[in-house]
Each structure stands twice: as C-alpha cells, then as structure tokens.
Length: 83
Image (cartoon, rainbow, N blue to C red):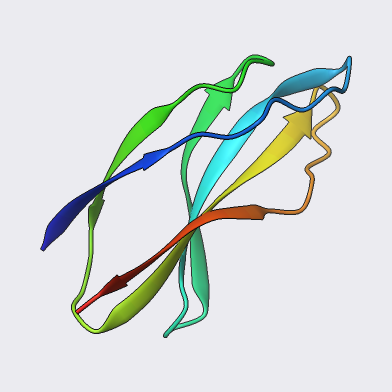
C-alpha cells in the first residue's frame, strides 16, 4: 500500500545549520528510518510517498543537523495509522 503525506516545519535558527533529516518511525516495530536529508537552512514543504503496511502506526518527524554533524532530537510532525 502506498500513501502520500504532506509535511512542513519551522526553520531552525542556528547559524551553523546544514540541513534537515526526515524520519519515519514504525511504532509497531519500534524502528526508525531516515527517508531523506534536505540540505540548507530553509524549511521546505514536502510531499512524502511511503510504502506502508496495514494495521500499523507511523510517525513522521524532522531533525536538524549542523555543519559539524551534530543532530537535534526528532520532532514528530505527523502520526498516520494505516487501517
């Protein structure tokens, strides 16, 4: 099954910001995957396409990373239950 999810987030204010990572967490299996990295300091609206399983809860999140490779904690942007 394939679904699309529109996401957006507020830009981080750090001067050494290198970009963002978009994460997908399968809550049932307690696994997380980085779907993509978005370079640059601007937050960008995205439309994600996900291949998902039925009867599963997914959390889509974003984290920021800086030029030194330090990464913030992931902020959940959306929770999606696939019936």
